[in-house]
Amino acid sequence: MREDCDHLHEECGVFGVWSSGQDATRLVYFGLKALQHRGQESAGIAAADGDSIMMRKGLGLVDQVISQGDVAALAGKAAIGHVRYATSGARDWQCAQPHLSNFGDATIALAHNGTLVNADDVREDLVRQGVRFRSDSDSEAAASLIGLRAGDLHSVREAIRYMMRNLEGGYAIVLLCEDALYAFRDPHGIRPLVLGSLGKPEDGTWVVSSETCALDAIGADFVREVYPGEVVCVSSEGPSSEQGVPALAEARCIFEHVYFSRPDSVECGGTMYGMRFSMGRNLAREAPVETDLVIGVPDSGLPPAEGYAAELGIRYGEGFIKNRYVARTFIEPTQGMRELSVRMKLNALRDSVRNKRIVMVDDSIVRGTTMRQLVRMQRDAGAREVHVRIMCPEVRWPCFYGIDTDTQDQLISARYSPEEIRSFIGADSLAFLSLPGLLRCVPAGGYCTACYTGHYPVRVPPRQCEGHFLEGSHPRFPET
Image (cartoon, rainbow, N blue to C red):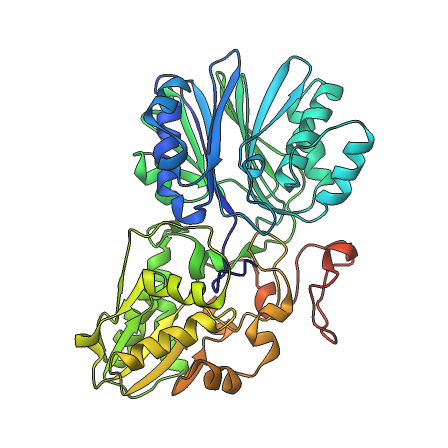
């Protein structure tokens, strides 16, 4: 996990368009803008015009990387795009996506959301076969594997199936070649991917996205999710689907519902906002407290704070003002700079909290240092009491499938009790939503809750686990 960060972060978002009559690149540009919350450190678009693939990518926000001139130059009937939150050691231009790979005289472009746990083994095997890599990205390993196998098998479809059989982890991938757009998802469905359409079906404009909010941004209709293990292909012949690998036990990332997905994104007919509001209600039932005001930490803490207040009949109000014009910067990860970064983004609203007992709701506590600063800010603003409520269980275990956590010793809940954490952050009380309380707020189905329980749905090679767990901890992985 990045040293300058005290919240969990997901690595990226993907978007793709196949269009027989509209400017696919411009639609992807607007789709990426709607997914900017999923990654702010690099962006890229690749477009196909039927004969070749062109690409523009770089470090920065979508607007900083892709100009309107680029959008015009990349015009094509199909395009894919990517926004990325870079993990440690992967901040250079070469790690920005999409990644290109050649097979014969053809080219593919690939954009990936998630983490491939055995990518190092696959990369080493590809290097032995003469493949040269420009980065240490697992996404480039996937692109290179598909490109190599497509050349051997003379089929992109077969190469995708081969990749899905040989690379493990959580992934949602969009892939572009000169004559088709592909979208496929890991067999557990860990990372999200949805399918949409724009205009009438006969118009032939199809869209894939990490979230439904990006479909809304371009006026597309949600059709359905891409199923776990499924491969969707869109070409001039229209859309088609096949099962790339058999679907396994469903294990959707629960943190999509808690934090990552935008509040207006929809799953199973319900919005993330509604689910988070319900999390606040359940939190109030499990951990009520007599106070004067409920506030949320912007932005993900706002819906559960509303729900908490509604359940107990306590006034809901604003306790922080957020500066929405602060872009992500690559600052030195000193404690002083981290504290300054928090104050640049949030400021306590004195008139709202002065002389009041407040409940402050947030999505999670990772290191605890940011929450400690937020509590202090409320006290400095005049709050008499500060009670902290967290809309999910304690995060005790690292993630290997696409959330930016690294080692268990970085997680404060893995080392300290709730009472010790309360004392550290300086709150008058602290409570977390239980796992059953959380699961009652999301659609029925299977979820990956490994960050709370240590029960992982996909095996992780032993060398990938080295140094990630505290001594004496006992994570559980599938045997096969």
